[in-house]
Image (cartoon, rainbow, N blue to C red; front, top):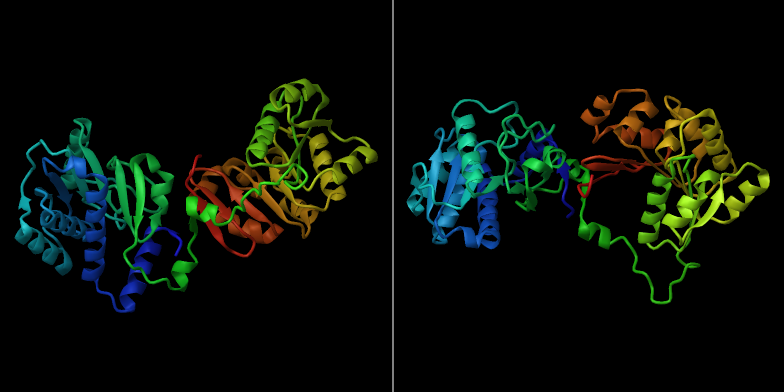
Length: 423
């Protein structure tokens, strides 16, 4: 099953659904801790010679840390556990007893350890850490600055699993997250280091299957067809990029370069005539065409493309809105609308929807462009980045790719996808 992206409450609901189907809290804790220990042994074997220090809190995340301690002790690793508070739950107390019986000691660490495990706070925490937890996090940072490698269990302690808020949070080198990728991890990747999702057997119920899918390398490779040995520009399709107002050729050039890297067969860049030399110099493989101003030029554009991308560096003015409208009225094929191709419809999304009609279309706003399009604030878009595109996709009948960290993609049938690659 694909990895799903979840908020804190959605993660809790997935775990509850799994327990409703027969799993116990102890079983989930054992699965999480043992899978994390296996990952640590596989990835960090060279850092275990001097033993490890595990910082544990009183909640279930601390229980996971005790299971990691037990499993690593069983594998011959010396484990010292820094306990901020005794476990609150029966499952956590059992995990503590088992770890101590396996050889884990409760102390402060020797200072020679090259690996620290953070199991202080989990997905249920919010707000800045306080008291003993904050002091433990400060010590983890000291050890990391001295060269220790920090592995966080589920989330770096203090990171809000839903919003990505990081006030006082741990900076980890590796985060081993259980069952789902957390929204906050993708928003604040700088606190997480590498992120590895571990399967702990969450039940794939209807609620879990409705969560956004993480777009990873395997997901992409299963969907992008191979380029055949006898492929040529005629079989690889034709793209026209319309943008590049005077002095703004750069975005259209970058779009064209991206298209060529994806192996488009024939590229045409349609821009202001003043940009012809810049475009020919930067993208010699592209055909240049000036913005269409006559029916004949529009017809030439219509018959020379299999898909049109419109907006990069186009400029935002009544004249460029007129250009977008004329192109969309004369061309009924697939379109990608970006940047100023969207800005010219600020607070007028209904008109854009009418122009798109029933064609295949993708709009690719960044958060500020989305805010302008739907008449709200950028902060509101960011706060609702995993939901805001669904209503837009349904309203105007197209896919919505909301740029950012992470990028969230919405299809008009309600599916959501999340890409953590790039920015």
